[in-house]
Image (cartoon, rainbow, N blue to C red; front, side, top):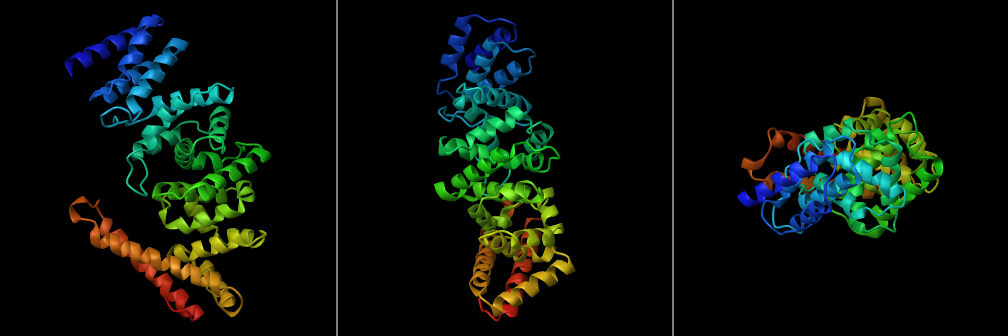
Length: 369
């Protein structure tokens, strides 16, 4: 729309200056709330223009908030803008997380900033690789960022806000959990882990994306000797979704390389939940384990089958069987023309590996699927 483009050109010129008039902010507030096609793209371009400036004033920040609302809130009848490299959004988010931590309420702005990372994703998929790369380069372990994200996970916040925060925490997993300097104090870490368990396990049923986020976060925690001590007992059960994790993520690779260390760690935990779910995870990824770990996994299964571990072995077989059935269905139903390169080969290889795990576990234990 030509008129809309001209209007936003004027806004861009106005908000590129060091000072603005109140009337300009009032006009921007009205325009960014219009349910007009293409408003998202125009608002996002203005947002990037403002956020590229140095030494932003309070007026600049208010204009950026209005532009973010116009770009990412779903009350406009248009598709969300293509974000690409989200460095301006991360700068905006970091600033408002810091303000939130001082007691100012900027929930709506935080929701706007989290929106482009997580919306309209296919089930179980991660955002665009460029977004992931940009997040990896940003200092998501800064005190203000960590404190702000930790406060969002608190049960007092809305389910929707915590959903968005969980997704971003999963994307910052390596920065938070593979850090030589703790990002939280001990009591804060325990509280955070408990609040995360409340959201993931207690509050509601979740789809594939939140399941993927939660298991990604747990693999990150397991990589850290400090974090793994604080994992809430009921949070271990998210390992039931271990096949959703990105196998290229370093925390996942580390956990499988150090599977025996984690097996010994979980054996020392009270309640048995950690051992139950970590051991089951090793059967899901049996094909990726080295010979020593495989021998230990099989020996443990034989010992369990002779004692009181048959119920857990049945659980693993059932979950493995469900995953095999899901992959078979995916292979059969996804049209060839929309499959990414190598999709069929990778999926069929995964299917063969899981079928092998099912048969091996059933043979060792004498159980039948």
